[in-house]
Image (cartoon, rainbow, N blue to C red):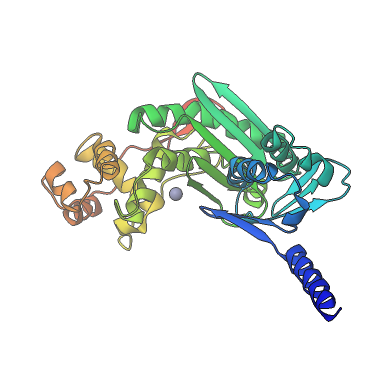
Length: 335
Ligand SMILES: [Zn+2]
């Protein structure tokens, strides 16, 4: 009798600990946690769920923007209204449905996840693709239109000019959680929803960030001031509406340095091309991508060191012709 009771107790304890046990699968940066794995009564199903998750969730998280949860709990529920309900960090699945070994779990998961976006669409034009995702319910449709227009007007030109191996599909995300202005990585350009609301004419963020997509320099290929200086030089040269956003290169002053980056560096690069060597920035960009850029590159291309070039620029900084794109008139405006 005593033995039977002991067995009963141990069976009970075992089943309690089994039901409380979670089970997680980690791949790359993402983790799927099965909260109640024993509710998966069909043994074939678990692998299918794991495959569907790692097919759908990382792509969703990339398009979802900044700080999207990478650890996701999955709970099997006895009766759900839908077969599956998913959002960032959480997936609920109907028990009868999942144990029936359904097809297309990945597609259903993908649809459920993206149903939380305000907008998601794809535009294709002359071999280029733009996927546009917005998490901002108040995104001005005019801003969406002009950002899209800028992409198709500028990005193909940048790709053809600087790097024909650059990708032809880019993802735009208008993100409400992102607090800086904009950034580009892995073919995705994040825009701060608040910034775009406050600066709806600053559409050449697409040109600057689009150049980062084209650059794809490996980590450590060159200094940050150079990468950013090139991106603003490109905005100056290929920008779609610099007049409309009142974006101009700042006048030279003696306190500046080429390492100031962005527009200060960009103006120096324009001066270099007009006074020292045409297309030198295209050459420097190519060297960076091939991981062949060094500080000596300036000397081998021009016969002068970077510091010597900057000193020359400081002597005649206004020996430069500057003109800016104006979307309204389609003409360049001299400034
Ligand atoms: Zn940048």
